[in-house]
Length: 178
Image (cartoon, rainbow, N blue to C red; front, side, top):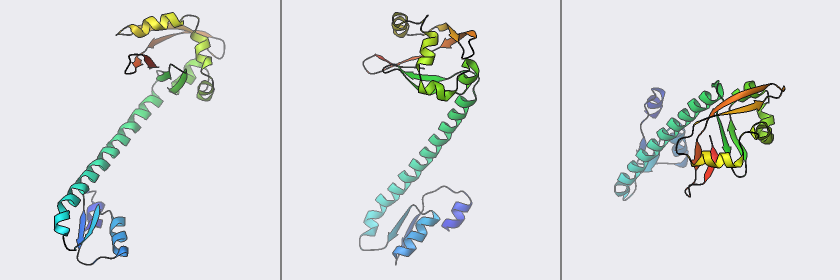
């Protein structure tokens, strides 16, 4: 029965109740995809509602984990294939938490170079975005587009248009730039 349900992708919790059980049969039943295994003993009917409820919650958790994994995969593909650069910088200490592969085409630097030395980005934009300007930007409820000059690895000067969000902590202090 379990094999047929799983072969048809029927995703329901299965609790096997048996009159006589052994460790070997329990292992085999779990390998087939059973959610739980109960041997009929004195008082098993009293425990059965809790066992069934746990099986239901376990199945719901597995479905949520699967949905989360699929959502993360969709986001990862979106971020990795976007033409725009998607990034997340920790403010203190300054660190790149994520930057999408599109940055290689825009900047001429490899991801490895940028992750290993955040100063590459900072040095190319610091002329126009000082600490005071950043402080003003981070106070604003709506962040405008920011245009910054940037020198690519090949020496070519380009302008970057950035639309950023400032992520703040519980004390309303800026923590991340995205």
